[in-house]
Length: 112
Image 1 (cartoon, rainbow, N blue to C red):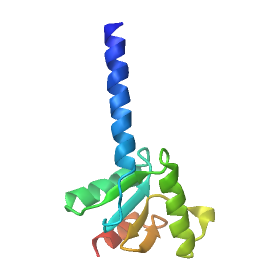
Image 2: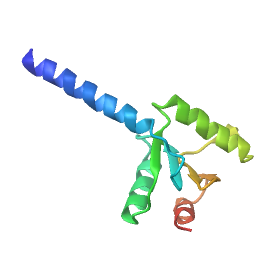
Image 3: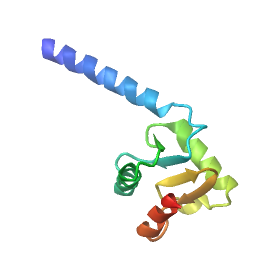
């Protein structure tokens, strides 16, 4: 019982920390990555940015409805069809693009 209580407290703390990280103000970030923690392209994108010491903020659209709505609004405003959204979606200083073709070319856009 003692171990179960510890586990519940730990998981509650971990979940709370994840939710706080998901709600950070990101107005000053140069790159915003909208994706999913389960998406291998999203994981590879984050690793690519980290390997190059490029600052970014990541929003998991699976658990953050506000970020999902924000992403969809940005895609719509950029004139990108919502009928075939592919993640990750990137907001690079107002330039909105997504992984909808060659992944290596997509990654290179992050470096430019």
